[in-house]
Amino acid sequence: MRLFQDEIEVGVLPEDAHCKLDDNKEYILDLYPCPLGKEFCTGNCYYYTEEKDIDEETTNEPTS
Image 1: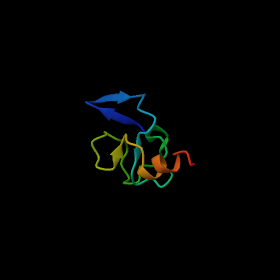
Image 2: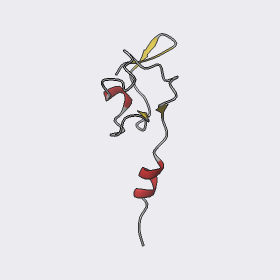
Image 3: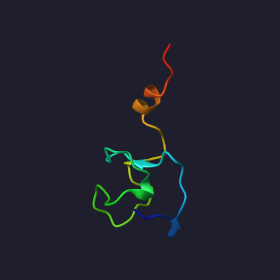
């Protein structure tokens, strides 16, 4: 998926950038097609996030 901000194509994003609608939580620039059917992403979509999933954070915690 191509991402544009202020009409400039973005080539690097934080590693946790993904679409909340994507079950696989793929890196947003590797995601294709857009779950909403858009040609490109602007990052202004409600479903775009750069935050880790809460499930991933708790899964990676060490166990005692």
